Amino acid sequence: MSEVTSERRITITDSAARRIAALKVQEDAERAFLRIAVSGGGCSGFQYGLSFDEDANPDDVVFEHGGVRVVVDEVSLDLLNGAEV
Image 1 (cartoon, rainbow, N blue to C red):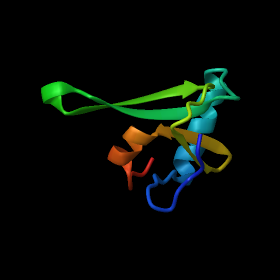
Image 2: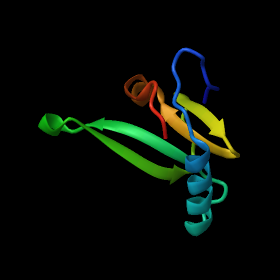
Image 3: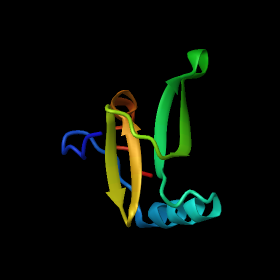
């Protein structure tokens, strides 16, 4: 898992950080991070997935704001670069 790079990044707003923290409590996932992933959707374009996860992969990039961690794999980050959560 690598730390944030200045070249590629996503932004987590204060509001999103608060909502993610609240959902973690609601889902009993206090130790988890939010994983954002992009997968191919065929003719429909891309599909975006959000889930709580506790297992990191070697190609994950971590973004942190307001005490919450958001993790994106390298391939998804190429597609999400510049996005705001």
